[in-house]
Image (cartoon, rainbow, N blue to C red):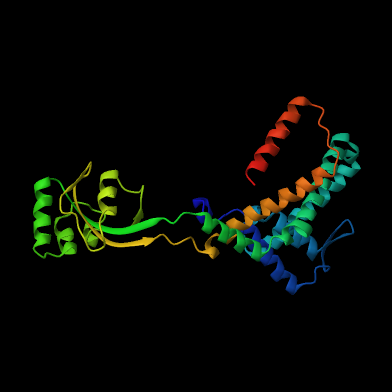
Length: 291
């Protein structure tokens, strides 16, 4: 499974909180309750809630009540400017009409996503995708090791001799190791997989069996190591709940592009500009390759 699945998406969290706040407010006041008027035209609680959700990123630091007030203030400003634009016949401008047509289509696009595409992304689909990713991921061996780092080979040999005589590895690590990160913890490096340590150290550590320690010093750029292997295990997969939100994005993308592909197949699309045509074809090719 791609390590990017471990990351939690931050974008959208504020929006979710805003929608939850709006839902809570809805319980307090009916959505069709008029909260204000501008030139005799009503502004309802539903209008305010919609503005909160649409503008939530701008309101991220505000309390729920402050968000409501800020949303209403924004609606009033928008209504007043809208009236001024109509009085000046700015709504008759061709560029404005073109923009409004695009915004209308964009809103309808969002409606299809909300009403028809998003509902197709079920928890069962997410779990199936998770299981598929886990099954496709080759098992990764991890080991937990301790080490004692010293400057010279002679020091390392002396430590090995003490271990052969029954000395405690953790105690020697606390006393002798020059590694500031692990020495105080008895040389404990925690679990790691191949590729995370310098090659010489890694080769010696993975060659050991649990409970065994290196019988000769292991040289690296850091000095000389005496290594003890504590435990071997197969790296556990990332828990489903930790990556559920990321998987939802991947599955949604697949469902979305499948819907787009179906619509394109049933439509007549002709791009007359050859440069644009090649660009669009490249974008669609990349989208298909990543599915």
